[in-house]
Length: 339
Image (cartoon, rainbow, N blue to C red; front, side, top):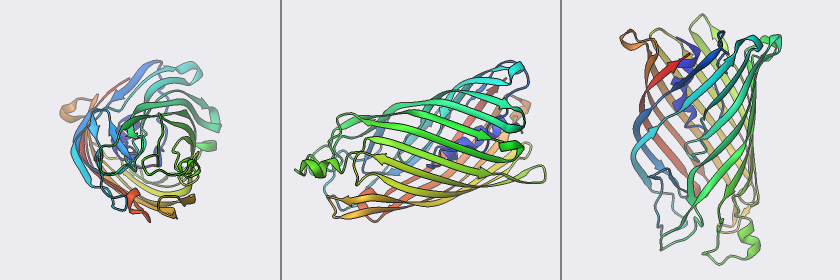
């Protein structure tokens, strides 16, 4: 099974968790020219969120709520995903230019498009740097409106990511990303008539920093176990929304032929900087999730084709029920690869 197909198989899980990391960078092809994949998928999604309004045309939470002390209701329906990568390799200099999908967190839908460069540097390892951009998400302009319809507004993420894989020839990978969050006409707390200072504490604009480290332990030719730690700092303008946290993740890969399996689990938490002016206490979140992806490569002997199926569950359990989140996903897809 190729590394490219394995990355496509694991993509569904990384769409779900906030780690925003990869199992390992795909190696740069030995031959020059174009390569890449596209992996259309369809399935069922059930999600609970009080803050994210919609992605593309899919509604993710109720327009109207009646109580700011209740956890969100579940919204469910069909979901479609089309992660892809298009790359060009300069084999002589061991350089690759690419455009593709940087898979992120389903609970906040921060999936972005990435334009980047990958460079092999001898015994130092493999380096990647890219520009990230996303504007397909709608959030509620003021999530705290009750008794009437809330207005949706756009949320843009823009930033960059750097990755150092195979550090000094080892199986260590380091990653850092920075994203600037811009919510159009942010109005959190306006409906409640909060003071200007209290509204400022709910401002969701700002900068999100994420850094991770993971090491792949190989057992034989087919088994890999990768523990990973992720640190994040959401330096948001609102002190009640700014937070710092850590996630711990464990990934197991069985790279068989033609069947492969990717199992993931993670747990972590986030502590927020200041007291929330609506609830009179400081928010604390527990985060956890798990998934399984089964991948079948080369069906019917077609070497450029693969199929996959994923089941996943992720959740945020907050000490303020309004901010609880949960997602359940069943997804199946087909991957087309070229090189």
